Length: 458
Ligand code: ADP
Ligand code: MG
Image (cartoon, rainbow, N blue to C red; front, top):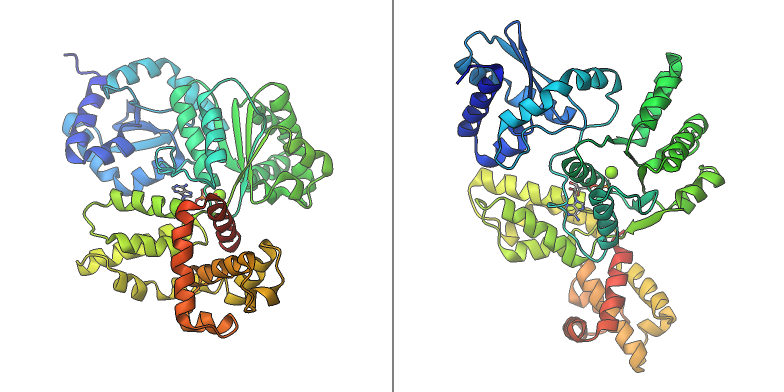
């Protein structure tokens, strides 16, 4: 076999594959491509800046070492970012195919990347596979998949909105990963609205708005995250709108996210707001219990070496309802703790370690608030809800309110009873049990409760 840099690269990859576990290899090394070897330096490309940085700070020495074993002339390595491109993504993992196929276009791509690197890095963990789907996000998920898997533009723009930490950025990155994999030739760009604005401002400073315009208008799929950021920023809004219109007129896909719906974007011009809502608007609701549990189960499966009792997952899912980011944070803290002390994660341990977090989540909803909202929701007067009236509708609503107090606050049964006109704690206990049973059989009630839980989890 002729010892070309391509064959050397294959050996380097083989070494790395042996050195690391399969997952690490797949996530970090397989996406790399060889660019060139020159002056004792091996130059490789990674698809995102995030990856490049991570590789350079964690694996630079190991990669250099692997190179030196196959080519003693190598002194150091360099990893550049080649946006919109994946390395050895062939099923057989053959880097050679990849290297040969891509070689002719390398020079061209490097040049483009040099003056055209304007997207933000993508987080390799944010994929469709790792996204857990539930009632609250199924619409957004379905729309995202549709856009990622089709070249045809079905709805333009796709506008994703929802509160903080509910998966908007995750879905956008997932779209980018999936789309790049399916259609490697497409130019997919993801960036935050803030990043967009900064680039716009610097292009004005350097009197180079023309190339700013040009680079954005050459994109096949443009995603701008957190567009609420450009509210009240008039010049940026104007440019954003032009870019947006040009892309849409040319039948390029645009995806936007915000923490609120287009019509609620205060500080954004009316004509822009209305245009933003022309395509598909998909909202992500606050998470429901099942979704939170699903996410925790997925995370638990990803750390099989740590023993976690099921009741811990259930406890966390019911108590940390603010958003997924916090839920993940809580989980990671438990795993770190358990790894340190070398013991399985129990409920007691969780309550102790997460004291502060649990308290913060509790503060969000009080018994009074629950009573008020439940009364509103069932069209009752608050005084009726707290009274001794036993009319069926009133009694059922009261049971639901007690149930929610038990689920969503840390109040004890006796103290909840006191808050409901001085009822005995066994009455509260009975209500909790009854509602738990009814949820399984009465689908209307189940919907009501899910709805109420959602109201309280924001
Ligand atoms: P947002 O952009 O809406 O503020 P992110 O996309 O940054 O929220 O999500 C916050 C964290 O929660 C991320 O780590 C993300 O992976 C995780 N996350 C959110 N929703 C889900 C989901 N449905 N399944 C798995 N992880 C999720
Ligand atoms: Mg986000």
